[in-house]
Structure formats: C-alpha cells, structure tokens
Length: 332
Length: 94
Ligand SMILES: [Fe+2]
Ligand SMILES: [Fe+2]
Ligand SMILES: [Fe+2]
Image 1 (cartoon, chains in turn red, brown):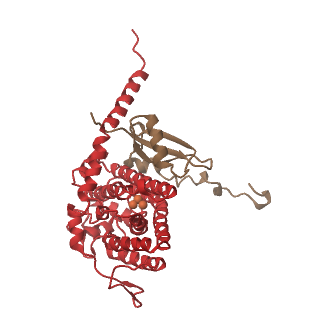
Image 2 (cartoon, rainbow over the protein chains, first blue to last red; image 1 turned 90 degrees about the horizontal axis):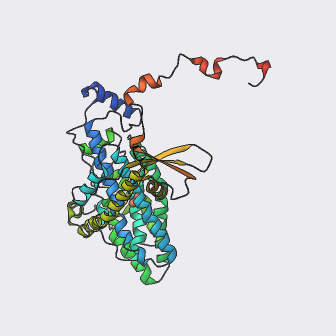
Image 3 (cartoon, rainbow over the protein chains, first blue to last red; image 1 turned 45 degrees about the horizontal axis):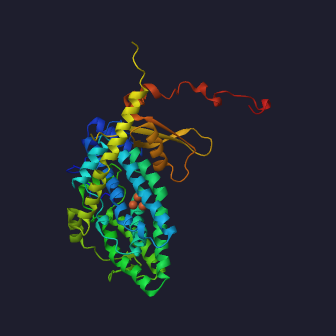
C-alpha cells in the first residue's frame, strides 16, 4: 500500500510461551487491544518495523503531491484549482503527521529525509506514473485515494498509539480527496466525446497500478503474519484488493467507463468480482527504481530540499539571534 | 549549517469551550513559526480557536515504569465515590 512490503526482521512468528516475560507481557497487551505508547518497552523488531512502515507511508504522502502538483497551474477552472490546492496541501499535512509519529520511535526527521533523498527508503509505487491529462487528476482521487482509504481505515486501529492517532486525522480528510476525483470524472464523462475518451484513457492507465498499490499476495509472508500479530497490519493484501475492486466496479459502471480487464466478472458464489492478475514484474521494476517517473520524482524532492536550505538556515539564524537578544545582559 | 529545527508539541482548543488538547507535534525554528505551522498543519478545517505550542524538550513526563505506584487505582478507597454513601429515598435528590 502506501507502505508496500514492509519487512519485519522476523524469521517466523513466536508463540507466547517462546517469549521472555517482558515480550509476553507486551504481546498480551496487544492481544487485549491496548495501545502501545512511545516511551514504553517494545521489542526492537516492532520498533524497527513501525519506523519502516510509518516512514514509507510519510514519504508516499510527500512524493504523492508531485503528480498532482503537475496540474495545479493548469486546472480547468479557478474552483478546480482551489480544490486541488487544498487536496495537495492535505497530503503535505498527512506526511507531517506521519513523520511526527515515526519520530516518537527514535528516528530523526533529517534521517528520514536522508533515506528518502538517497533512494534508500521506499515510497508507494503508484507515484512513479505520469499525470498526462486533467482526467488523471480525477482518476488519482477516485482510485488512488480510494485504495489508500481501504488501507488506512483499518490502520486507525493499529496498536501503536501515535500511528493510530495520525491515521484517524488522515482518514477524516481522505473522503474529500476521493470525492473530488470522482466529481472531476463525472463532469468529464458528461462532456464531449473527446473528454469522455480522456476519462477512459486515464482509467486504462491507472487501473492496474492502483491494484498494485496493495502489494503482491502476502498470504504466505512471514512479515505479514508478524505485522498482523503486532496489529500494525489488519488485513491481507488480497483481502483489501478484493474489497477495492468490489467497491470500484459499480462506480466505473455509473461513470459509463470500462475497466481494462478482460477477466473481470461477477462471481455470485463468492459474492465478489473475479479479476485478472496485475503485472507483478512491472511492479517490482517500479519498486526497484525503474518506473516511468522514479528519477523525476526523486529529483524534484532533492531539488526542493536543496533549494530550501538557505531559507531553513536563515530562519534558524533569526531564531538564534532573537534568543540571544532576549537573554538578560549579565550584571557588571 | 543545516541543523534540525527543534520539535514543538501542539495543543488546540476546539470550538466548544473545551480544554486545550494535544494534537501532535511539528518542527519550527521558533515559537512564532511554530504557531504559524501549527495553524497550517493542524487547523485546516477550523478545528480550533486557540493554539498552544510548547517545546517538546520542556515537557516533563512521568516514566512508564512508575505507572503502578503513580496510578494505583485506589480501589481500597471506595468512599471517594458518591455511590459509597446510602442516602435514604425520603431525602430526595442529592
Ligand atoms: Fe493522504
Ligand atoms: Fe494520498
Ligand atoms: Fe489523499
């Protein structure tokens, strides 16, 4: 998802009686649905996994501003521009809530930025695709934020207090994001045939990358089993993907758009849709840095960070000077 | 130069005459910028009418290991609860 394929360092999930008393007490608190708070004891693997997951999630929110930012200056009306600006500003806020949550686990903001800018840290594969037309902004809100919501709603119940609270704030803001995207597409499909074709083209390009957001099947993954035992993951990737498809197909029908999957059909017996397999080779290529826009996205991030250095330094210098002035002068 | 800005804890009073409540934290070079940033990060949808910011390093917290001694639930002191006292019905509401 926004944090795809998070590793846990666990060779396998331990049972309660294999744990030492401290770890067992910790696991029992989690099993009882209690929240873990920053200064409390936690297994090193729990702490590290959360840092990976929350920082990947934060990086995704921050990098995720770039594809949409591409259309702020070219939004078709002033109202659409104001809406898109507000949406992108929300994403910046989401990144900040999440960086703060990660910092409570003992990693600094600068370390996380360094990991992102050096390419060491991952962010969601979805943000490495280009936004070619205004309809892409509609498709992102509808599909990408839609998929993000699927994943983020259960994360509100995550066992780590600061992450859970950040997710609650984020979820409050997400439904505006999805609705504004769907609203863009509703308008376009009622427009000229050229506008409707743009909407269909956007769906064609964003459908499979959106399904990949949930990550490959993880039913057999020890990392996923460990994350579930720690309650920092609640559903399997396939479960969430299925929910997303079931929710989205009728919405595409409402728009009069065709989902680009020849294998898509209703399965009465399971009460959900059957659908095709995303191209996982493409997914692994994008994750490895070889997607259509990886270099551009990281380049834009690095440049923004470097271009802002003088300004950050100036504010620090100003604050230091003001603090010196405020200090009472020593008596003679 | 490039040293990290200090961390601030943000407290916001919601519309309804409630106490200020902790909402999260942020980095800022000084108090004034911390307030400005808190406005942008934590009150984009009129969530508040007043903001406090406090440097995280100035907060003194109880240690998690003291949980037992500090927050022992005083179950032996049931007389702290009004239900401990039986007031006859004839007395009426009290
Ligand atoms: Fe977001
Ligand atoms: Fe997002
Ligand atoms: Fe969003």
